[in-house]
Length: 254
Image (cartoon, rainbow, N blue to C red):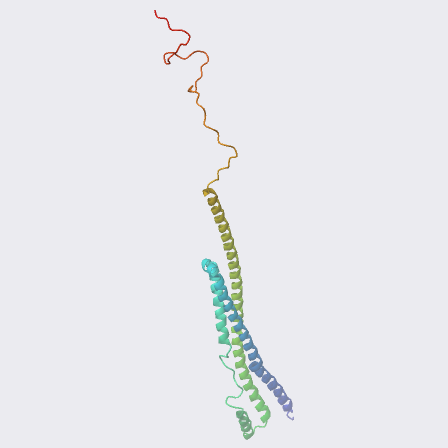
């Protein structure tokens, strides 16, 4: 019974397709994904820096309100801390901490050396063996680069949630600050109006009331008729208290 004829040509073509796909994935992880993650990291970096600048300007404007309200102070403090943490994570995630693995360990010349060793060892299928070795090397490098990109992607996702939390806390803080500032303004206006009313009342009560100007002359002093206020119409006054002069005849002497 004759041995079956194996399709070595098909096997070699399959290995070529596999090597082509693995190589595309490797360079995509090394170039495209890495470039995209760096751009996202820079965008988050600018967002966090802008948030920190806005928070600093808001503190200068609403410092009197923020320091008085403890709840507003905590919200503002956590918003600033989250923005600073996001800024630090962006700086940490931009460079690849684990690095990217190259396909050759030393240089591309080692692959030609491997092919030569296969030929020197009288290997009947040099090409297929070489393709299998090449696929394994590219696959190892791609797996390492995939882990590097995954770790950076995790940091960027955490950064995005931190920045979103910081922005939400800033919105809550700004709302509370605006409400408090409006209340303080209304209180100041009410106090100012009350003080003005009190000052006006004080000035009105303390100012002397001007006397009205009379348009008639002042009456003359009263006359004195000598009665002492008593007038009698039924009897004469006692003669004992007064001297009586008779003008018609003299008083007879007995």
